[in-house]
Image (cartoon, rainbow, N blue to C red; front, side):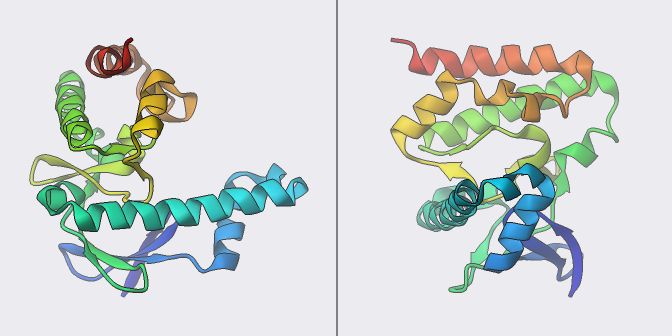
Length: 199
């Protein structure tokens, strides 16, 4: 097994040309990984612990939701779960890599496809916590899928809150886009999702 990546919650190993194996970090590595990304948290150990434990619980809850929602299996890159919390998944091209290979004029079409895809998940009672286009989604055979399974919300109040707060427009999501596409992405997501929570 060759290690090909590491995220907030898992190490990623290549099993074959088409399959990856994702293994949750051990506790100490969760803390180290978090501090690597947010070093100032070393001065707030209680908050650090809450964040790390929250991430761990979020992953467990997300995997449970997916395992119960078999109709969406292909939308999550066909995961196969182990009791340990590790899982196999189809290998994807991350959207962050895919967009580098397409003509600029196709970017808006990809945003359109993405908005339809995440809206369909929403209608099934699930959202990616931050609608993080560049980081949490990928492409398999020209089809968008969720590649990061660790931060899915199914609680109606949590979903509503993320939509009202326009999670897709947060700086850590939108800064990953080319400047010329940021406004279009926000506009598209606003049009689709904000009417869902209007009173």
